[in-house]
Image 1 (tube, rainbow, N blue to C red):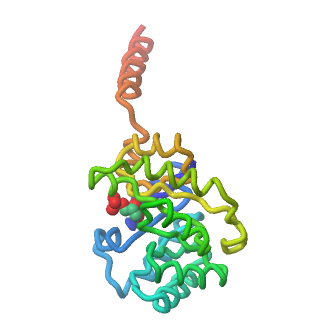
Image 2: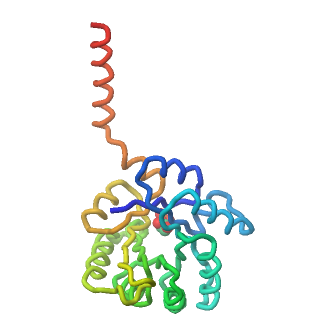
Image 3: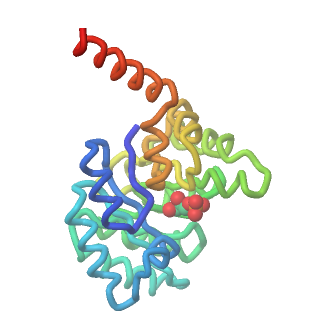
Length: 226
Ligand code: G3P
């Protein structure tokens, strides 16, 4: 499993990259708004993120028609070679994905909740598919069950003829809210988990690790004073 950071915060991205496990970044309009992002600086900001990570950086189009999504997608893809255009799972999004994929532009289909949405995204040529886990949990449904179904369904078929460059589709477990979500997503076989920085930090820590460190330090003091 690879880890992407789900954030637009440059400090978080730089810090996570220094830990050695960061394979990419996903952003969305909410995450950009959260850091106080301004429209006029959006493209520059995506370029700055792309300079911090070698892997794919998803930047979202909020357009509602296929022509506008394609127009946005072309502009975003031209910002850096590692930009992936995030497109929502809807009819206009599918149509735009077909055009962008044919031009060799990688698409991450977002706001994907069901197996039929995922298969349609795959057929349209999406390179990444992002089933949302936490938002299903928010409405009292099991987001991990849905994620498992998408992983299984996508794995049942060969979609390489649809994707730009004939690459394998990767399923990104998105809307991840806890380290346990990451554990379960890995057991279900999701290719990637995109995680907020606070979840990444929780993934590193465990109380038994802290307790073990504490006793090692204490015992080492005894050795020094012996
Ligand atoms: O980037 C899309 C997704 O990860 C958003 O998560 O927590 O807003 O549901 P969340």
